[in-house]
Image (tube, rainbow, N blue to C red):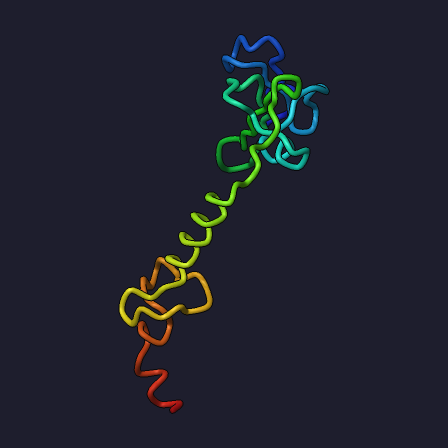
Length: 126
């Protein structure tokens, strides 16, 4: 496991952007999720820094950080966006074979609702 010191590059000389160990980023930076929890979004700003979390067998986990002072408020959902989102979710629930609303998001691995994907299992129970 890499030592946290290997992830410390506040000047950005080694990684290209200022880099800090996991949980050691200075104040004033936040990840996308942290911004969203505050009702903010990056707003087109470039990545300002990153935090690295070393892992044993694979490369480190990377979380990109954005400056809080440049973050913009999240755009409000308009009526048109709500309609578009509802239409997209309805399409994900609609079985392409029987055209019925399955009541759940159809798994991409099946591509069909469960009764259409496994008709023999549902014929026996009827």
